[in-house]
Amino acid sequence: MLERTVTIGSTHGLHARPAKLFSQAVGASGLPVTITKTGGKPVNAASILGVISLGINHGDEVTLATEGDNAETVLDTLVDLLLTDHDE
Image (tube, rainbow, N blue to C red; front, side):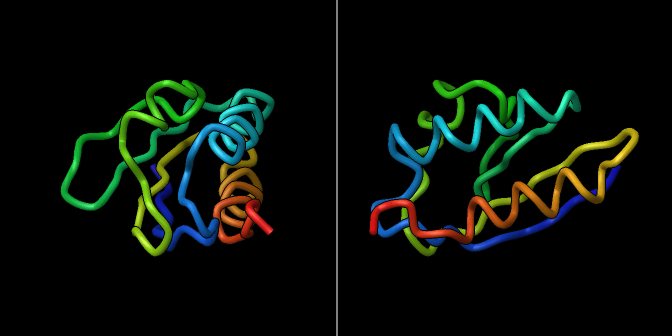
């Protein structure tokens, strides 16, 4: 299992629009990915409702975890999405 920890870049956190972009990217990857807010429980990162339910704000740290073919590439792409400020 590969993991990456990243700090959220969107000014208003993972609200509907950036959560949708992120969840869609996870779904398109074809890999099972979980996202965990520091101190919380992991949720399916392909579930927009699961992601939004974590209440992730700007500057929060989250950990992504996955395994499978191209796991490194998938995590690189997802980390870039989370680092980007989608509220500009």
